[in-house]
Image (tube, rainbow, N blue to C red; front, side, top):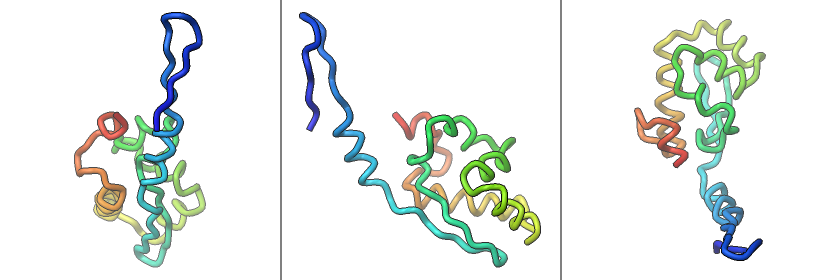
Length: 112
């Protein structure tokens, strides 16, 4: 339940803490994937830290996003396994689907 507090006369502050917690608690669980012998776990897209929001949908920096989310060691394993752009596209599609994000939905609209 949302609560509001009066801090000064005529000014009301609405606390979103309870609502935010409920939304976070309703997110899907992280998903573990396996491709070409490399196993990795991705959290729901909407649970990523705010500072990654702009980079998640940026195909020009998919490697940076994967390094941030999975870590450098896992990305190195992907390189060694011979991942292709098609593999990365498949990962992105399944990640979106299992995160409850529609394909092509921008993260800005997903967060709002």
